[in-house]
Length: 369
Image (cartoon, rainbow, N blue to C red; front, side, top):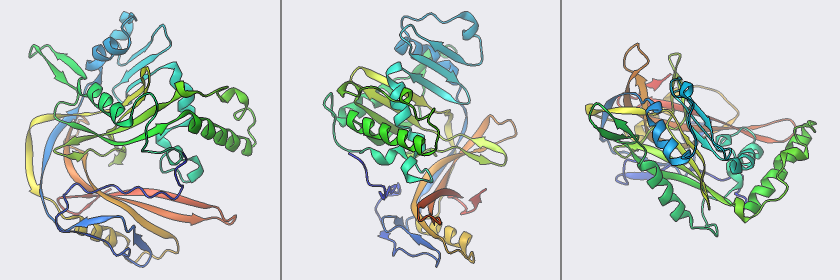
């Protein structure tokens, strides 16, 4: 079933329900707050942690055993800076320290053309695949809750041998995983979305790209699957999901995505991750959500604009900041993340939405630039 294009996705705050009150929908004269955003006046203690980039190559053996049991890896690939292996059945495993871990089976290729999670927030809503699929309901081969449970357990057991300690370490050792949202990709919805996307390509007068070779000849119940998006949390606070530039340095966002069908995992993506040191560096009081919203107000005070801009969500996240000049050691600190959506109506009457995110240090209220 197609989701409404005007859907409002509101991220809940993680600071508890105490002292919470809905906003009145107004902040400054050219910026409004979505009525669904809930503010907390509570101030809490949140720890910061020293971290370093996780060497994802250490976890190759786990994924090779799990997905490539009958494949021999050439020695030259074992010694390289990344692993890229294609199995006899056409499935592929790629592990790269900067792009993360990717596993894909041939059955997922057509689905990938139809549903791209990274299209979320597209300027043109017609190109946002996530708006065309439900995040509730069940498929015939298993319930959504069962699929989520299987996927969470699958990721919780990812491990590598720690030869120095004579033991194993888990990829998400200090973290907890929780489901952010699960998209129900039913074959009828996939077929309808494919037709829509092919038509969009034809409207661009690019018949070669929009030709029948792009389409799947027949969709069936065998194509049904769930696309599970997980948050990686530390002390109950999710790590920032999207990568961002900080002082000319790319700070990786952290997310885990798995497509699960009746036969098992069809696609897996694990972003670059941070290994958390044993002890917290410090624990300090953060500003409240209400104070963070005041920071948004201060940033836009005096800006004259005729465009309608809405604060769609305000959420607490951990983000990494460089701790030295090596680009290896980082510090995880809490940040208030405000997602703003600007409405633009073009001369032809078509409406577009431009989404942006601003980040404030939750300790100081100072914006991360």
